[in-house]
Image 1: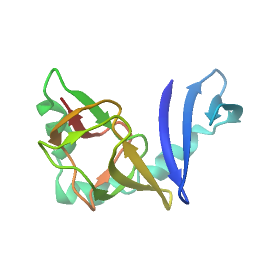
Image 2: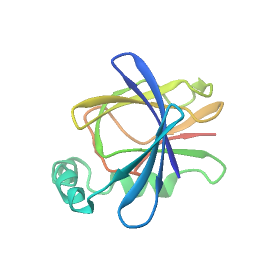
Image 3: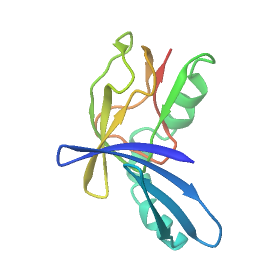
Image 4: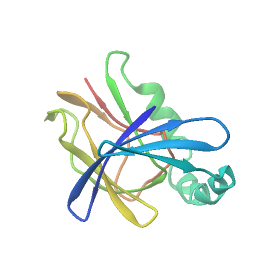
Length: 141
C-alpha cells in the first residue's frame, strides 16, 4: 500500500492505493474506499518526459539514491512529474507534515510532506527537474 497526501485547490486529501488482482486497485480518499479499474497501458505515456530530464542530469536520480545515508528516511516521488518548488534546504529542521516541495503531475500541483520529524540531510532535486515515481527527493535524518 502506498500513501499520498495531496492539496488540490487548497483542500488536503489523504489517500492510499492498494493494488488488487486483475487490474482492480483500491483507492481510499479521506477514509472512503473506491475500487478503480486500472489500464496498465497508460504508463508509457507518462514516461515521455524522461528524455528531457536525461539531457540535464542523466545520472542524477541513481546517484542521489546511492548517496542517501543509511540511517535517513528517504522521501520519494509519489508520482512522475516536474518539481515546481523546493521549500527546504539541507540542514533545515522539519516536522511531520511540513511541506518539503511542490510537484506538478498531470497539470495538478501536489505537495510532498515530511513523513517524520528530523533534519533534512539531503535534497536530491531542484526546481524544474523531471522525476519519475519512486525517485529520491529528500532525505530526513
